[in-house]
Length: 113
Length: 117
Image (cartoon, rainbow over all chains, first blue to last red; front, side, top):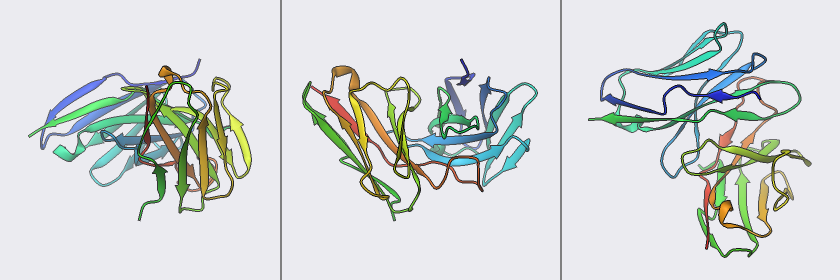
């Protein structure tokens, strides 16, 4: 079946370094992608989204890159801070009449001071 | 300030004892969702309401029901909780179906952690 998955389940970085979290998706019909951050004991928090007609979108300290050729999505966090420690999920919406987000497995980002 | 509110944050119930989880929103969004999230796993959609229209996921057990009495509130009813139903239950909202208009996305509440004894 269609799925969204993550390459790395855990990522540990030093404070101040840049972080890159990757996500692979298999549904070529997907046209909208979202990155969520989930801190322990909290609900997912929207970080940034991107549509399939774009290949890059920037936010504050975050950049999402979309490569439709290889069906790959990445989240780049610049100057990673301890507050960035969380699980990061990519999610896709594949269009059609359903309103469903399909979430990837999640990557645990740990920022070491 | 909170936009999606879930009560209670922690719920303990006994095996087989019905339980209801509550979600309310101040965003006036048309769509409300319920997800189940087990430890170290991604959220899994149970069902959603688009206005008053209920949409159940094919693999959602019959044990799970939902009610949406008005735009602001949505309830998750677990008729006979089993040990396997222990999880975080997340409520989310979106103004409209995703990706169709603007940059609307799903906004999540803080979740209710359900323990089944």
